[in-house]
Image (tube, each protein chain N blue to C red):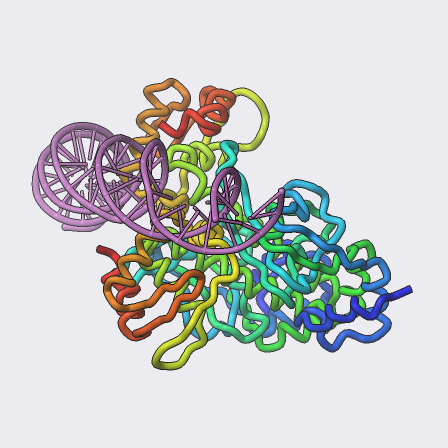
Length: 229
Length: 229
DNA sequence: CGGCCCTCTTGACCTGGGTCAAGGAAGCGG
DNA sequence: CCGCTTCCTTGACCCAGGTCAAGAGGGCCG
């Protein structure tokens, strides 16, 4: 019996405008699952039999070096899907996934997903669009890692986290700083130091997990050059 | 009148098994173009009206920092397509493209490509597969840039450039070393230095643009730890 | 309220790899 | 054959950012 709670997946762009019968087909093998903070969801290299829609909480996608060092590739926030970029071909996950905070997800089996993909042009195109967006994001990340300094990446992150528009803005960091740091390719200590500099420069104001951006203009200027001290 | 030379695009996986009428539709607005070494093909940020199939030569996809520093995202070799990951939505190129050596490409207008995509499931799935592969590659690059040392990346590059199997192998570098260096996130000087170390360690033998891998096993071991001096 | 844990901050130090500069070597047109 | 250019190598130096270590809060449970 299909649970109503599964229907939240319609919030994902991927499933918008999906025909009811296709949606039912996809949800037939779906179930809601809970994960506690730090609990693994899937492992890199394991066979990808499902992909996920995040209902609440937060999830990090990451890789590990042989020495156990971790690089966060992406942080997933509610109402978006993850792991979908790989499954339609019956491949393997390229990253590990684990809950950052207590999370609720819908796990969608991929058995018959490619048939839906083949019969539903709209969904295939949406998936193409989704992958294309991730591709751009990843290209941006590669460029940022190689062409920008740590300070520039931190500033860029702050600017990306607040809606555009002039004046001030507030950011509430829902996830630990070390996860954010790894996401932008920096050690936690360095992240902390950069925030200290920005704070003492009067560009931002930090209070616990809340950051006020006091002068967005100056922050953008700092990112575009001054951030390379 | 369609030129026969255009039919080389069938070598691309993207167009395999394409119906003749769809192929004709795509090739209707296609043309062969030549680019001299260093000549730009398209620019990041410009509207993406076409994508490309590389017939001969080599092409680099790259980003520029505001200071003009360059990061090569990908090096394209003959018989593969590039710029296709973005065009179907009428977006903009996320990277610059320029010929590395004198090159011949087929330029494919994207006007009606999405209609082909919608009517041809196979092509849509192949495109999905292609994007998925690039996504994995990019994730690998991000991980490599943050989790591995320069030496490890160089060793990894060498190993990736020769077919698997035991014993020796030869690599002929078709493109300048500074392009390879940028591709793997290293300065040309560092690339040169790492090769010198590997050479003096008896792991490889360098002669101009040809590199012999003398001991693949040792090179793999070096990459997995020793390469972090 | 006190002890414990976990995250964050800050300081002191170190080093991988980038930068700058000076040759080689190889191709190429004249 | 020579001069010029382009690419590559090597040496000397430097610095951004990583590492190690020592607190500083702050939240939670008994």
